[in-house]
Length: 293
Image (tube, rainbow, N blue to C red; front, side, top):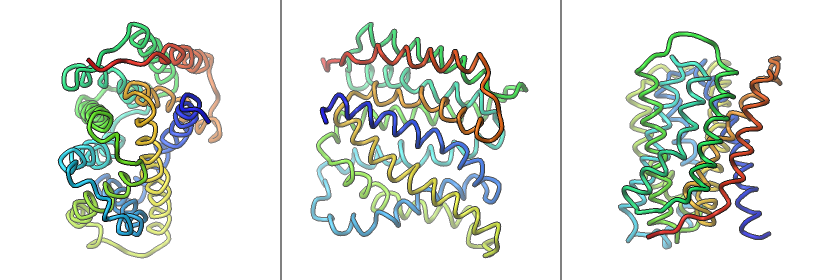
């Protein structure tokens, strides 16, 4: 498979996985508080990847440790808490709009920090897809009061994702995807997530009943697929494409969320259909590659 085809396969796969993470977060929040969900998500991923990380410890990129730590906390730790915290108060429509802003933040961070240049074609593609995401999200959420605090949490999370994405592309592109995931979750974030879980009161309030086991099941699926596996795929996508292209996964995720809604008994409206088509139309403008100046 050529790199061009592979990056589109990864983009679609990531959209399916991460687009499904919203409902898993929602189900997890029915059993645990937001801090427990975030900490468990990282901790379980670290436990799963620990054997591989230990087996490959000699390959640990010590000279890239600073950048690995930055990528770990901005992409795989802090946002894991911000999203559950925001989803306890904010509607799915507003969350979808803000999450779809990531390509814009990638352009800003890439230009200001890493001196990435962006073509007019790519800017147009991002703009078209973002408009589509807004149409889609506004057509799927419940109307209500817009709360500033959770919105700021989501904006911060998206900004951190953009910092992580551009950092990986600029400084960690030589590290294989599976190794980076293993090191990030097993060595860099395992202890911080365990400490966070303790302070969140998880072990103090832990009772092994049906509700707890069901909640752990949702978090485990979210951790293994939505965090560990998805991050590997994301790192691989970054190694064969551009940060801007990789970030467009956030424009496709709302489509997956709508599909979950249909499976749960909701109907696809005309507005949602138009939004999905506009998103796909915008993606065709993202084939040109930005150059580093």
